Length: 196
Image 1 (cartoon, rainbow, N blue to C red):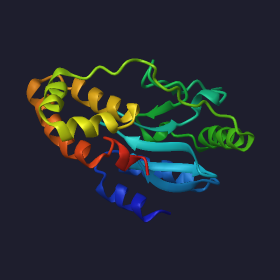
Image 2: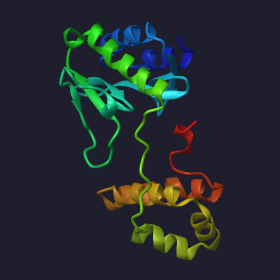
Image 3: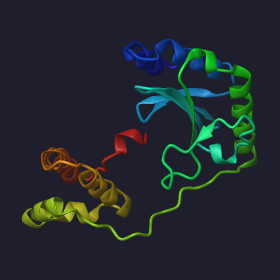
């Protein structure tokens, strides 16, 4: 078992027993355990298969290529409808809902798909990048910042723009802008640290 994953569970205060129960099921399967995007993730031959996490009202599993799994138990939901096509979620609200045989079945289907090389690849966005006014004005006023921003890949530019746009309050937008300026100057993307 991965020590980083042990640390994840030591910090957890909600759904800890339930998540450890899921972990015990997954570690008995031919998967490698790691941390990605700040949560336990289980891979097979380098491919992401399933992740787990707990939230306020539920805990669950995320099947990275869930859309390719025969959902015979009708458990999957798309938590980001319109945003994700491959990833599907299996939510639980109690330990009693966890069925290790059903989970194993879905994991084995996912492993079989990896073996066959079947996957849904993410589509690159073709939409034009809309730079929020606050970011645009800041870029215009700082030459080095503007040059660095425009030298970033389109996907990194889009991540920064969406990060500012998604904030509802102006004060939050300003805080987010202050956070990303040094990152843009370093030439890194907003989510680079999670992509390792």
